[in-house]
Length: 110
Image (cartoon, rainbow, N blue to C red; front, side, top):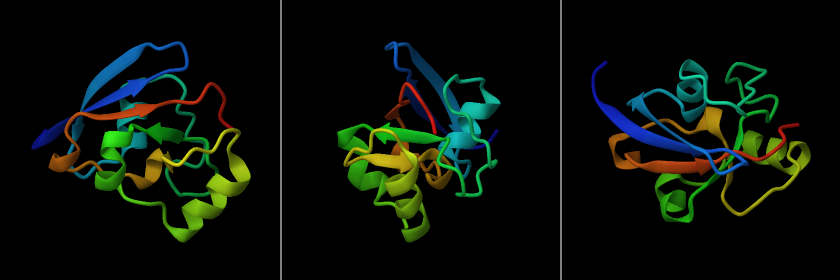
């Protein structure tokens, strides 16, 4: 599998799903591959639907970085509860620096 980083997904009921993600994969793709519930990913990672919305844990916000312009538009229009750390998981590439990344999955996706 190559270099991996742990990504922890927390669903709306508080259940944790800790999975190994290949460096270079997206947080969304990793969730889908590992059957993490709540990441709908309707557009398959093309940044066009906002059904992979997550809230990044505060301690990882700067490492993940801010959303791009297109992602920003989707977050503004397409998510039920936007937070300061809202991101589309299809736009977060896994790096070694993100080992232990924790994201919360909202109870509803658009």
